Image 1 (cartoon, helix red, strand yellow):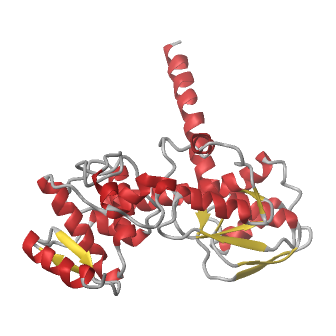
Image 2 (cartoon, one colour):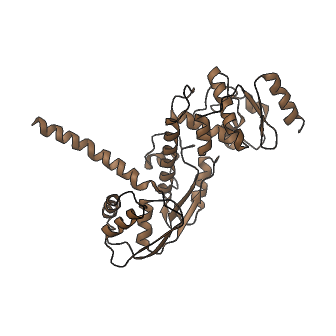
Image 3 (cartoon, helix red, strand yellow):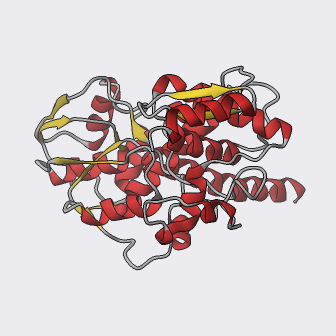
Length: 331
């Protein structure tokens, strides 16, 4: 009887664990051996033969997950013979839909570094080939649908180009972007510099979003990250304009005023110490890596030169001179 109870317990744990892993696996992007990747499915091919063909071609990592997915969706006999061309990475779910529709054209959507979640939702709604299943849903409801544990959607989706077939759900695309961001974030977190003043991957994501908005020149990215890390280490306020602008929301008219910097709100890093409560935009991979592997610098100030570059300073006097040179004189 004890053995039976243990067996039942193991099964009750294993089934939901496998279901969660399988759901993630079939929605994750497939890394194609080359792009565009062209292949043909012969008339009369069985599901087993098709799955093995795709596995031999290095499109799938194994044949059984695609077989299980096809049978789960009741599409094991619906894949059409013909010539196919994949122009970018695609999930197994999208690939199955593509093969079922036969000659369906692939579409793409681009999420850009520095976009906010409202900007991302807008571009999804405007795409004519996407089925908008999230219209009318709150951000929190969307997060629940894609299986995210976070309470704010900002910054959670990886900026990249996503390929899909016509009438794919925006929920599926968001889920892929979310999973991609989690994968990149966890990989970068595992390779982070020691002794950073960041306690969680989410804090790293928040800092990365600030770095994304502050960086005008790629070569300055790790140096800007180093400045913010130095400030966090000594308890100095970040004092970064993009967080204030984000907190203002629709109130921001394009002109950041002194009163905005002095008025306290959750994202005002001039009045509050530490990181803001959430990311302020979608950071790209280079910003995530910079946040977790910043340049070793003594600088605690920087100012934009007006040409995309930044001037870094280790003390306030030098910083004030740089501000006079590069900003006040321009005004």
